Image (cartoon, rainbow, N blue to C red):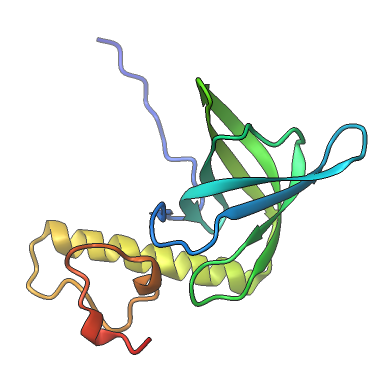
Length: 154
C-alpha cells in the first residue's frame, strides 16, 4: 500500500464545538451581482485561523465574506473570511472557512480555548484523576462527561 506523507497544514489547534452553541453562525456576503445575502450554518470545529461548518441550505456563493460569530461568554465577533473548500453529500454541505481578518484578542481567546480543550483530551487519554480544571477557557462549550460544573461560577 502506498501511503503519502500528509503533514499538518493548520496553523492553530482546533476544537470541536458542534454542541452547546446558543446561536448558529451567520455568514453575510454579497453575491456576484452585488446582492447582500446571508446563510445560517452549524459550527462543527473552530481554530484561530478558521472553522468547519455544516449547512443544509447550501454553501456561500462568494469567495470572500464576513462572519458574525458568538460563542458563549464572548462578545459577538465580526470576522472577514474566505471559502477554503466545500464538500457536498446530497443536501448537506460541509464548508471549510479560512479567517482572513480577525481582531488579535479574538484569535488569542479561541487559541486558548482550543489549547485547554485539547489539554483536557490528553488528561482523559492518560486517565489522570483530575481532568477538569478551574482555569479552563473552553468550559462554556464543553460537554464532556468529565466536566466538573462545581469549578465554574456561571
